[in-house]
Length: 350
Image (cartoon, rainbow, N blue to C red; front, side, top):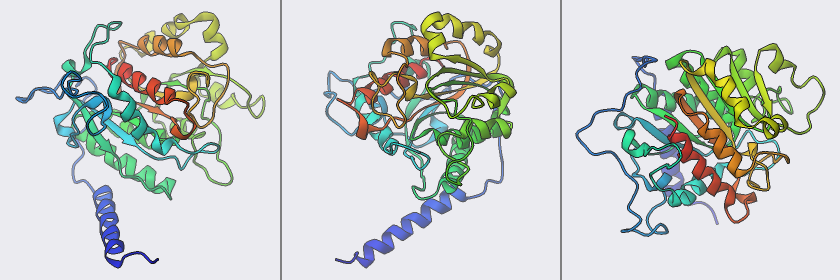
């Protein structure tokens, strides 16, 4: 049966509207001062998660941590933003469904962090901003959309906490961050360095964003740290790019032996520098996080990744992301549940 002409026209109008909104030029660009990281003062109370003693956790419309959906960045300090794109995957697809499933599993999150002694929802104005408009058929157009839409968020004075999606979205996120903060410190928790070249004639994939971010000057030279790298690579030259550009690497094997102390030693130079954190869920061993696009054995446990993220407290964060959750490969939704908890821990770092 053919498509209904009215519905087809409606879809075309929606797409045109989205494209116009995404690509509209801005007449002014307000740079956020590097020191400007104070909570916004509003007459309205802070957005808060729904009370689980009034509305059971399995009820209601899923949002990140049961926070209200507020698509107005000017009202927020931290914007939880879904980026449902997996056009950069090279093995298992599915991370496009990551934001939706993490929203569902985040219903279990409670507001007080007894380890870091903080309720992030009281400290900051935080809400579910919704999902960015992406193009599932074009990585280049998606990059443009992400950078422009996050630019609007940043100009409104909110810092983005993005939920992917595959790791290819890191590059356009960092492009938006760079326009407002300049080159930033960079901490990557990942099984892979993502400094490879393109695949199958395409320059961009989830294995390339760090390479291009370095080459485009988005990351401050000498202020990049990768933690959790492990497994087989294509050749003994695969780490040449990282060594050439002074990217510090702590492998999973080294982390298993030396623990969080290895990381905290490296953090001293980051303390007063605007820094971005990216967390690929495959830094965790597939025994604890099977739902990911490129699983690699020998990774961190759930307890280790929680300790690692908490050790990053005290950094001057300009944004962060959590990526590569692939629900179709998840068992018992344990990957999405872990991701939701790590997302909460990331909020507690600001």
